[in-house]
Length: 439
Image (cartoon, rainbow, N blue to C red; front, side):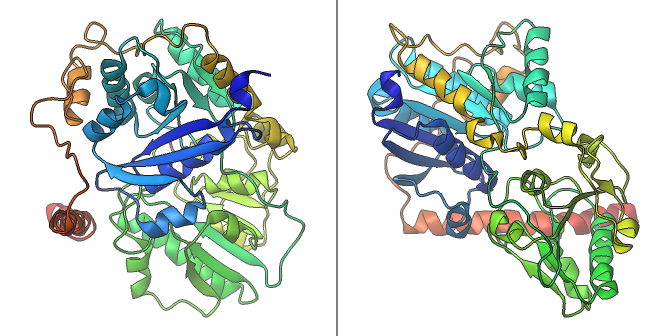
């Protein structure tokens, strides 16, 4: 067994939202051997979606330290004894953020000793596949959540002449819970809402109305609307029309409720999970909970439900109102990394072995080598780096925000006010302007 499988491991996770912190922190846990003593340090990238204390608690992962940083502050922290400070670094960021950090870390580390760098996707990859993958290229491991994704990822990298050896098949890190054993009392239907799907008032109001109507038609059932965030909180995706606001105009029956909290705990009492395309569908399928992916608004790429073509889970509200329970296709489920067959416990073995080999590599690891460089993408890469206050060489630009100490009370207040103003603009002002434009 490699020495790295049993020694104390130091892991850092950089995340830019609640969902990506959940993915990054749980991935870090899955990637470290059970026999190893692990120290986990969390870094939250400062921005509109920085998670709140409640959102962090909901994930259920306790970090040994957790602090909010700018990208430049993070790079400065990583440049201090990079080979001795951490063994593994997980970049749980949007694609552009990953690419910027890869170039920034390459500049900070050079050819010296460094940690193993890991990145990947939070859930289903149904849009911007090539763009997102090439922005993540350069990490030592690019995690694919299923055999299906691993095949697609390698095909993209090989298709542009990039090294595809970093692609490593795993599974979603937040699958788990007890298998479904039968209907609860009362029977519980859960609709898993998404912040940006669908993205307009008409369709979101339609889904809400159908959910409420389902509750009226089935008074013996408990019908829950599972929400991602409470009012004022930020999420990975911008939510212009939160269901909390839309439901204020309704008069739902007593068996209809809004719920928050950990999805796994909600699924513990779920008899039918309904969604448009949420990753919660995969969590439910993993536990063999009846799962319906709605077709009411069409099966379309923009909705993401096209990913479930062939799953056996596509259904409409009319069918669900009539008592239909979709039956998943076992072959489809197996290729999606759901691991309902009990193989989930070994899903991360290959990635753990790969990390152990890299940590024990004679002479250490080579410098990070992203596909995008000033030669391969001179019209694209500089803009991505500039958004994170980095120059074309990955070095922080003059005047980049990188305070040497935590923000004081006044700065914290200003920062919270700015985020609140942004949230108000997204959820209230922007829809009004859009409606005025339609007049």
